[in-house]
Image 1 (tube, rainbow, N blue to C red):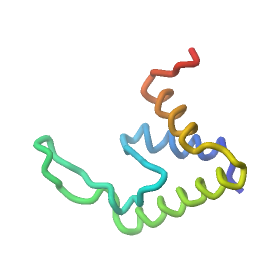
Image 2 (cartoon, helix red, strand yellow):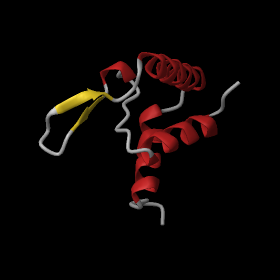
Image 3 (spheres, one colour):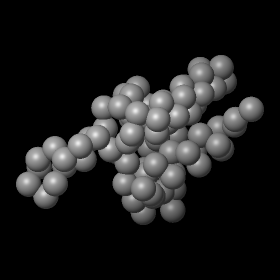
Image 4 (cartoon, rainbow, N blue to C red):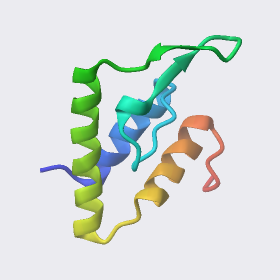
Length: 88
């Protein structure tokens, strides 16, 4: 069973890896671009995308079950990873 802390850790891993994740977008849609903005390929293999999509679904299911705000978790993680934590 996952917890809200696990969701925060998952989002932190994504953010630190430079993945501009979105809880409602499939990882199949993530693409890499070169320095000129030209698409160079998908960010994740089909297998990786499936696994990440499954993990994100578990996150969405848990926040729904607990009536938590997934966007609040995203914002907190983004602020912490970027060093712009407003709670300092």
